[in-house]
Image (tube, each protein chain N blue to C red):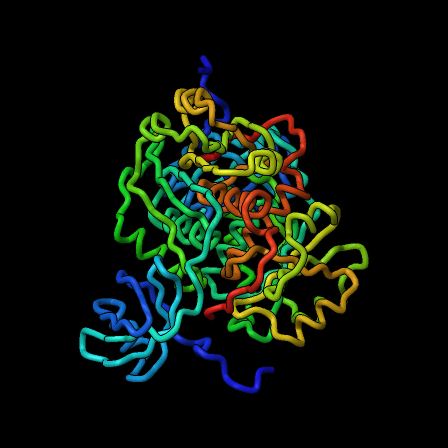
Length: 259
Length: 259
């Protein structure tokens, strides 16, 4: 048991801010974040909070003033640099809102670098609310002590995605008609990768043919049971992180859980 | 493209019933399931539905009568035997309802044989609504074309779980303070296994010591990022299925997606 209380306190609120942080720099917190700090967390002058900027990393900061709609806080000490995450993109077909939020939340927790939503023929949704997507990923990162946010792109049509596919990036394609077992394929193809997951109902035959025609595409199988689209996305991302990402890397330190 | 329409139709409703099915046996469907069939799916006499009993497997059945509160259907032809799933238990600490429902749903999809909920010191929930748990797992199985339901036990206290732990079953323990990378441990320990996942906030020191004292316990690590409890459960279950379960097995047939 530590003799002195932890600093910053484990219960300190944790927020992502848009501005770049630096020692002694005062930043303003407004809107929902100010409401959260003052009304929900009831912070006062002198309290410690934790701020991240997705640029320099994670800072302990001290509240300088609490106004009705605006809180000011000064960065005091950098706690961690912005983390590096594996070079892994997730390209999920759009699915209904709750299920897509789950994909965004879990992809953030699992350390996905970039999310490229895709629109396919069997998608029943063809738009993504960018602001909502940002809120979901920021909240997941705040909760899970991540210091880096995933990039979330605007949705692309499948043929656009395939046309511009980078030469050096494997496109791991969850093919419901079968493919190489994912674990073996992911282990074999370590390096820049992306995982393409279809919507409920899967890709149609023409789409499957177009994907398979791409030299970078590798059809993979996710076992004998049918997985919902969001389950396939989460399960295959976790597997990639474990066998081809950084789950087996040596690490100096495990960050302290926020809750 | 097939010249004749699929039978049973891909859109046929799929239900688990409590009674054992057999050729020509008529069974009664009541309550919410009758409501779902008549009001939501609008089935009528002569329509085909799909029934599972978690005993004999999956059957095509024909509606014989549609009453106000009771529908009768006769099993016509067995489509599949009840599937075998890997010998894998999930032992998740209880967490808040929505998050626990997610664990139950995804564990069902991923093919977990048995779910043994655990109550630990940092659990903010200590009860599980058994009926609700059954509803969640049945709906997940119906949706994902599973023919076998996971067993869901009543919650046990951690010390009870550890006291009676089977001699021949590895207890893979997601230890936030670190452990063998999960992928390697799961591959090494193929065979009857269980995965123990703590609540938000993790196990306390005494609990961790008690778990580690069990000869069957193997502390595992789930990578450098903090995962929420339900994410850890889903991610590690997917990983186990992929590297130690049946994702790499040869299989004769991929079942047809329900939706």
